[in-house]
Amino acid sequence: MAWSVIQRWVRRQGRDVSLSEIAQAMKLGHADALRRVRRLVEGGQLIDHGGDRISVPPRPWDKPRESAPPAQVRIWQAVNYRDMKGGAWTAVEIARVAEASLDYTRDYLRHLESRGLVSVNRRPGQATRYRLHPDAPPIGQPPVWTNRRNRELRQRRAQPP
Image 1 (tube, helix red, strand yellow):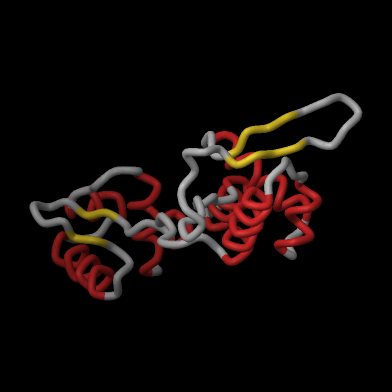
Image 2 (image 1 turned 135 degrees about the vertical axis):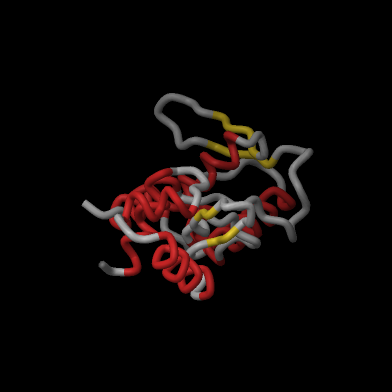
């Protein structure tokens, strides 16, 4: 039996499990299950919380980000710059100044709108115009946005069939 089978089984449970549950599910003796779990804990593939509680560490993409990715930093700086100059601006202008793709810029601006950091002025037949909200954080602290769809696709690929 491969070592990763234990880790995948624990992840599928969606909760902390006991050593006896692992031994029973893998059809191992208690001593053999203990030896394998210890080796997986030492390798960082399982976490032993003590008291017979074993879990898996979160996947790297599930961990909260400490800082925004470079494209979001550039977009946030461009938004602040355009707002300091005054007047409303469009997503096309921000994408050009931030040197980011238009689709990514629109998605990030939608995220900023959902958090109440930008106000939106939509008019039929005209480009959507944005303004920075007065209570928005300073230029050095860009709000972090994680692309939920990409994260869900990575999770589906990582799960065994």
